[in-house]
Image (cartoon, rainbow, N blue to C red; front, side, top):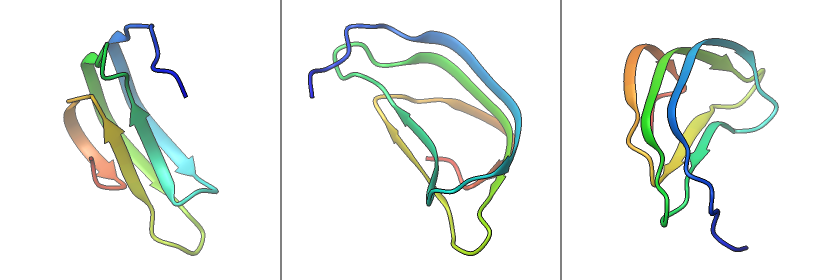
Length: 73
């Protein structure tokens, strides 16, 4: 897979809640060439019916506030 040539910045994820079908509920992967900047994540509450869930991040350093479920990267 080729790296993305798109630069993502100034994004807010806020008050996200519900269910997920996958074990990785939060997947934030940005390009090494253009890492994500100024990303804020606030009050994430996701669940799976029967298995533990997690987060995965790459080339991003978000600012977290409030509830983080699954735990932040």
